[in-house]
Image 1 (cartoon, rainbow, N blue to C red):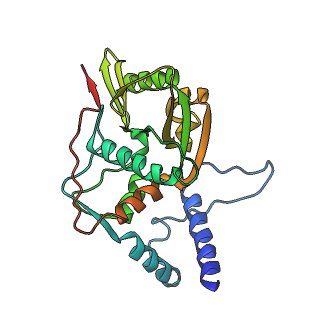
Image 2 (cartoon, rainbow, N blue to C red):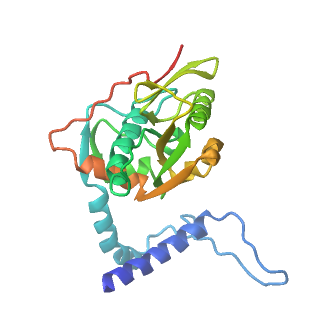
Image 3 (cartoon, one colour):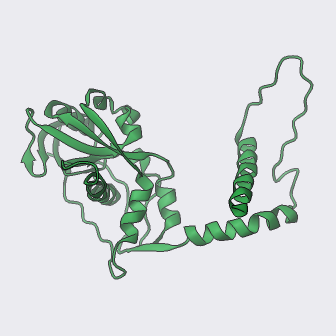
Amino acid sequence: MILKIKYNLLGGILFSFILASCNTYVFVPAGSNYSIIRVDSLNAPQKDKSMEQLIAPYKNIIDKEMNLIIATSAQELKVGNPEGTLNDFIADLILNESKIFYSKISNENIDMCILNTGGLRANLPQGNISKRHIFELMPFENELVVVTMNGAVVQQMSEYIAQVNGQPISGLNISISNHHAVKILIQNQTLDLTKTYRVVTSDYLSSGGDNMTFFNSSLKTEALKVKVRDAIIMYLMNLSKDTIISVQPDNRIHNE
């Protein structure tokens, strides 16, 4: 308990310093007398040894956790448009993991996954992959949700993907011509406008983030209460030790 309290207090102090260093504007009530003391390498060139000693135990704990190797890749996994190895890997991973989470709250299946390339903030390296790499890849606190939509909305989603020249998807195959989706397959079956489908995504995107306004016409949204980042980490940590990640693009999004 004491450790937790100290950790939270230290985190608050560090966060305050971060905010102070990042703010460009200072708002002060009219008539106030004030002066700004900037804390940076120019006016505080010497390290504060007492502060370093205070932080050291917690930094060591965090570094040990973040540097933990959780997977190995045969190649660098990169974001690409309309398709990339990182796009495919993360979307497939999220679809597979989400099916496990969803089975605990529903007997229905998830048909597909859509994420956004803008949410993939770093490539994954060839060789060892650590937890730190996943936090760099996915620094956000976004959580997974399962969205139920009719076929017409899936068609709108596919048109959006075609217009922006691709997004990370799984369970979905789109042929693009002149920035339009001319052929749409879901689990290798032609899109049926009369059917209902389920897509897993992040709560940010399901709320219309990254201009995904088609989600506004969804029939239902169910929270899985799992962070996107945590799902990635769990998947990688459950791989067998001799598994080497290797991804080959499969033209799930392609221009005709």
